[in-house]
Each structure stands twice: as C-alpha cells, then as structure tokens.
Amino acid sequence: MERDEAYIRHILDAITAIEKYTKDIPKEQFLDKRNQMMQDAVIRELEVIGEAVKRLSDTVKEKSADVPWRDIGDMRNILIHEYFGVDLEIVWETLQSDIPHLRKILSRVER
Image 1 (cartoon, rainbow, N blue to C red):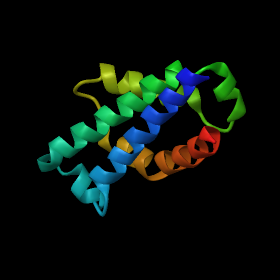
Image 2 (tube, helix red, strand yellow; image 1 turned 120 degrees about the vertical axis):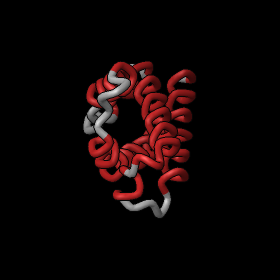
Image 3 (cartoon, rainbow, N blue to C red; image 1 turned 180 degrees about the horizontal axis):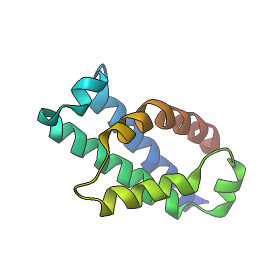
C-alpha cells in the first residue's frame, strides 16, 4: 500500500503541474504551435500519470472501478510511442474532462 500511496502522490503532483501549465489557457492557445513547450510539458506529465497508473496495485484499481485505468495506461503508450502523431485535440479533451475527474477520485482514494 505504501507504494500505491507514492504512485497516487506522483499522479496528483502531475495533475497539479498540468493545472498550473494550463491555468486560464483557452483551447486555441493550447493548440497553437507556438506553445510547443507547454504542450510538451503537459504531454510529459500525462506520461508520468500513465506510468504511475500502470504501477498501481489491483487493490487500488478495484476500489475505484469507475476510473478507466486501462485507458489511462494506453494513452501513456500512445504518447510515448507516437512522437509525431500526438493529437493535441485529444490531449486537450483529456485535460478538460478526465484530469479533473481523476483528481477527485484519487483524492478520495488517498484518504
């Protein structure tokens, strides 16, 4: 369980970083090619989230069966292996819908 706590902390730290990088940033600005540094930073944090999720125990995953754990891990694989094919629209949608939901659930699991 101690390892799970560390992984959950890594995920929450990555979510905090993503929120900081994208605070008050509209979609058009996020997608703009001139913001590649921000895009790369967000993608890196999503990779961290995916890697940490893959290492969580089945016990934690079973406690929060409403989280699409496999999809999160699969997204990490796509981000890692699709160097030139990352769809920033999908990344943006993930930031808007999945990341807040994941924070809420992990905050509950962390207690």
